[in-house]
Image (cartoon, rainbow, N blue to C red; front, side):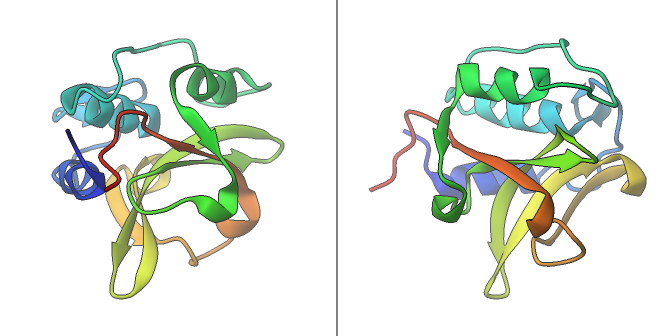
Length: 142
């Protein structure tokens, strides 16, 4: 049964992979694709979706995660969990939380960086833009 370290290790293996809207592999990946590929490869989820736009309007992006993962309170999010962020008004960006140098990080395919990066959650305005957190079900938390 996969654990949080397995999630983080697999997500980090995508660092540097180019950003590609609705990409699902090492030739290109987007933020939702990273969560989907990691979850599917570790057999924690069994789904995929292309039902989202690059600039979301509404809560379809949030709904996609709510239907397939366990929602948890934001303060309970830990490394290996998934967090969603809003851009302007609506949720439209997902990350896998990591831990590095004694601080929470985000592993994510980020369009402005044009690739998968890991950066501190505390950088910029990310904390203010948090919308929801989710946990992969079937995770070995012991």
